[in-house]
Length: 87
Image (tube, rainbow, N blue to C red; front, side):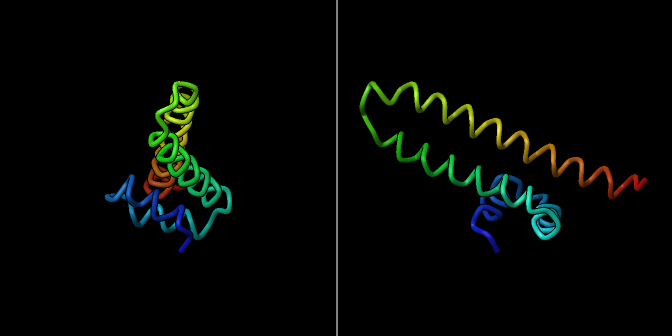
């Protein structure tokens, strides 16, 4: 399984099944998971940097991580909705 998917499962452990289903079915979802993992990893590296120049970058990446997490949550919620109320 893609390492980004593990990040999604860590974020949404109660929705592991939906995350795994989405990861199997959607390259876009896997890409979203990879983007989140990459952004989190870069943020961790930025957090270790004590430079004032990095303050703006840290804020930018914190925001990016939050946006990616929200997008991932929306995808899982949509998946749950479609499972409960098929078209």
